[in-house]
Amino acid sequence: MSLTTVTRKLLAILEPHGVVIGGVCGMMHGVERFTRDVDLATDLLPEKVILILGDIEAEIQKGDALDPLPWVIKGVCDGIEFQVLPAKSVGVSLENSVVQVELRIASEEDFITSKCIAGGQQDLHDVAVMALQNKGLKWFAMQQANTHDCRDKLDGWLEDERLKARYGS
Image (cartoon, rainbow, N blue to C red; front, side, top):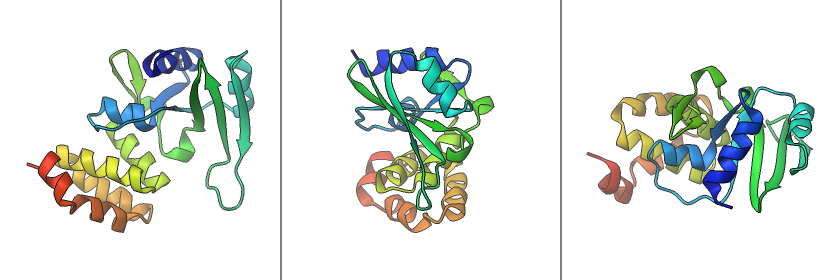
């Protein structure tokens, strides 16, 4: 089964309460990257998600004091790993979503916010690529990075000569 097929399947199950985030969303916004899993956000309670997933293998993992997320659902659908996360906790509003290639994905701004909340190196790389490709997003990205204490990482990527050569103007 392909990543796109599984993304469509999971999104259909969560409809209208789900939106694609993570690497697949980034690719839809023009970020060149490789991903092997599907990340989605929802406004549903985790128990409801498990119920509507039916026979799809998935489990709720609760956050702890070191994890800002109250829960994450991790599972495998047709051989592809996926996660479902609480939309508000990852900075995503379902109302701001956009549709591209028949997939409901997080808006550019919500994608940037979710990546800044996660704060990992790959996350900030993705944000920098978007900011370099679309100068209108750079200020927003820097504001979000300040808010979520990851500005140093973002600045490092924004100053990366390889990224500037590839994506800058």
